[in-house]
Amino acid sequence: MNADVIGIWKEHQTDSGSSYLRDNAFQNDWSLWADHSLIPPKTRKRIILLGESVARGYFFDPYYNPAMVLQTLLDTNCDEEFEITDLAKTDLRLVELRDLFRESLKLDPDAIILFAGNNWITDLYMSIDEKDAENIIISLNGKSINGIRNFLEDRIKNLIHEALAEFDYLSKENKVKLFFIIPEYNLADWLEYEDHFSSFHLTEDKISDWKKVIGQVERQKESKNVLKVLDLAEKLIAIDPGNSYGYYLAGKCYRKLGKTEDALFFFRQARDWTIILKSIGKPKILSVIHDAIISAAQQTDISIINLSQIFKANTEDYIPDKNIFLDYCHLNARGIQIAMSYTAQKIISILKEKIIPLQNLINLSKETGPDKKVEAKAHAFAAIHNAHYGQKYDIVLYHCQQAILADCQITAFLKEYAELATLKAPNLICKQYENIIKNWGERQYGGLNHQKNKKLMDIILVKAIIKSIKHEYPNFEQYIKMLRSDQHAVNNFGKINLLESPYALPHYKFFLGKRVQFFEELASTSSFFLVVSKIIPVKLTIIYRIPDAISNYENVRLRVNNREISTFSAVSTWKKTELVISTEYLLAGVNILTIQWPVHLRHSVLNINSTIDDIADFINPCFGQIHEFYASC
Image 1 (spheres, rainbow, N blue to C red):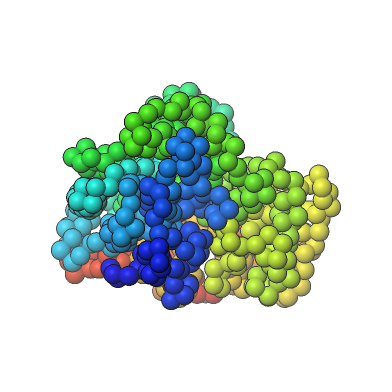
Image 2: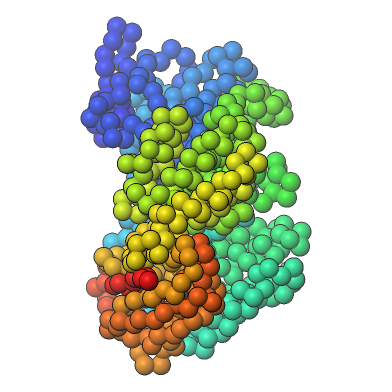
């Protein structure tokens, strides 16, 4: 901890006292923090907000965020007695929060609000040492999925109790009142569980049963027979209680049946099982984190604002979903307003010893904004974010439509972005990207450019945009088809590398573990896009292998537009296979090629000296690897 630094702000002495100026040395991190060049000397009672991207107001910031809403609520009801100092930071981890808490005390706060917990699973993984790895390996080799979960949950409980004990000690020592806002998670409308499958703890018979039930689930997806799907979900849970997908399906079914408490239970189980080293890329508040914060706070003077209970009291069936969230954990305007209204009520009741009717605060919070253009962009950016991280068409379409409802002028942005996604060139050299930055800016969302060497074709997003703006641009769908054909059709180029990101990545994926330079599939199915402008036979050439494959493995299956056209033998050494897709299987436009990798019992065990990456790879096995995959005509 630097004596003269608070976050990205460095101390500067003035006649009126110490102020803190944003330091150019931290310029690369400025976008993660509040857009303030100066933290002035204290002139009123100071309340500091510390937290993560949810507290930052991700998708809205810097034009609208929780600190702004809270400041308005306190100003109106407390005669401008308090000032909010916003020190929330996107991607803030628990270890950083502890440092920032200590640094923030130099600002002489009267109260500190902690709004955090979503990123703490990262601290858990990074805290695992060699001895911990040995204990996990013993559980893995003993096929004890519960043993791993219990070990990880115990570890994160200890981290949380230790941190909150320190916060409580420092706040008492400095006579600072402490508040803690516990985040909530988008339980119903964030799906990340379909690809999660680990066979290390299952017998060959159970793996066979799993595949059989999954096949039945696929056939029932469009069925209105909720009880049948629920029965299949319960079978999946019985076969593999450590897999999130069965719980998520059960939650969806119970919600349709109107059994809210059952739905909540299964949605939470689906989320909570991802603690098994499966989902570092998506921040989330797990039940163990939620409960540990409450348990630790009960031994302190920390005042809790529990968003799970708050949203339960303010939503129709109190299941957190797209009506509160923009993605997995980031709140929409309504969510921010409800959360800050409860926070303001709690602060005023404790610091001013008076009770403000909650509805008065909620009504006032709605008057604080956001501006219609800011809200429209937030939903448009959420549509992009949801699409880029594997969400389904209906959610992406919902956010496109909500963006247009907020401000119909957003259609121009959506149209330009759809064109940009369809172009093969990197975004940074495209005129459309230049126009987007010029006319719409990127301060509100940093994900408008693609990841390095990972431009997506954004099939689902572009489809949702086309539907959303069809009334204003009725010929846009035909234009996109022509542009996509021009940029990507195998007919135009003679040969296409299907391992390039527009064809091999439907969305971004994050897993712990070691990665290789060639294509590696960590799910049982791989999907590729093949664009043809004119229906003619297309030749496929693939060099592939399956790590640890043995002679009794089933064949690899290749489907084109959901119709099986070929099978390959499962081999552990690189094998080259060539085949021709006949015209009867192809469509003019985008064709979906799917490779179904075999799922079998893994006979390997972990060495006692294995690293955390080795452990993650064991839990998230590689189903198949591809060295080359070309389409030609």
